[in-house]
Image 1 (cartoon, one colour):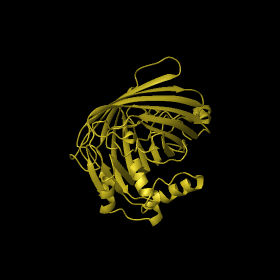
Image 2: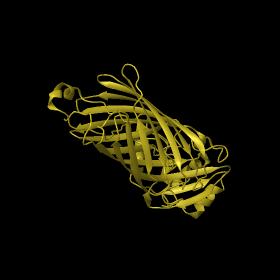
Image 3: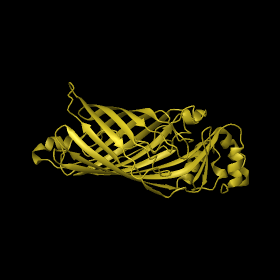
Image 4: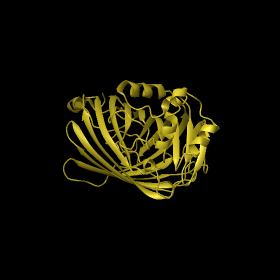
Amino acid sequence: MKKLPAATLLMFAGLASGMPVAQAKEQEQGQLYGLLRSRDLTPFGFLRLDMRPAHAISIKPGSWAIETEVGYQNTWALSPDVEQYLTGLESSGRRDLGPADAQAIRDLPGENYLLDMELALLDVTFHYKISDIWTAYVIASGVSYQGGFLDSTIEGFHDTFGFSTFGRPAVTRNQVNLIYDLKSTQYTSLGRPTDGGLLDPTLGLRYTGLTLPGKWHLATEVAVKVPISGRRELLSTGRTDYGVQMSLQRKGQHHAFYVDAAAVYYSGSSQVSEQESQIIPTLIVGYERMLTARTNVNLQGYVSPSVYSHRETDLDELLGTKYQASLGVRHRRNNVLFTFAVTENLQNINNTPDIGFQLGIAWVPLSSLPAR
């Protein structure tokens, strides 16, 4: 997507809980919460398993915690020839794309694509602390596909700062248009192919029994995405994915550094745009700083390769690595942590959303956090 400047702003929702009043000094110092717990909302490979970054909070054995997060993104992604085609139509005003436009895009030389949509994701995560070193979790998710409301805001930003229009003014705002004309796929949907529904659940297990010297901490986890109703368009690949993750954390008195490295066996997909089975690595690097005893700020970067290979397409935009930056703020009130966050794509702007937002709330009945 055609982007706003690199970093933007994000705020994320986390956790908190009660502790004895005797620890007043610790209460004044605040707490570190870990990386923002948001997943990648890129429409290319969105249905695959994506390991959520590990948090830095430990709940008490035998207790549980709940996280709820809403993610929202706007995507306008297209190949160079499609951008040129739409830019040539701007003088005629906005239009609903129809069969003639879809055919004109298919008739362009080489491979081409257009993704014009907004996506809303709801994640609910249930954690249960089995012992001092083992935690199990399950993630239930639902998604809604829509035309949304951010098109005018993004276009206004581009106009204000002199960025290209990227063909947006030729198309009616707040609609869904999906056109693929790749080596392995021809697919067109001028309108929502589905309103949305439940995604495949994720089951995971986290282990924190490995000890490191000094202020370093290590968490490892495994997870599996389980198809519940077979292949469903834009909801499930109908295939099982597996993932592993290692999270290295270095905590200081008022700040912390984090590195999450994950590898997912993605079983591929045969819908919309074909993708083959493969191992997909992901790296997340982040920094957290306490602003007050109850408010923290996070900055983190996300890097992951594309799910496409030359078997499916030769377009550089779809083969390019995904780079995203997130900036977020968390605010804690007693056992509840609130988060608001913004994610911006970087470098390869036609394979990730233009901009994404996350809102979160986490509730932890019993944890190591001081009451506030």
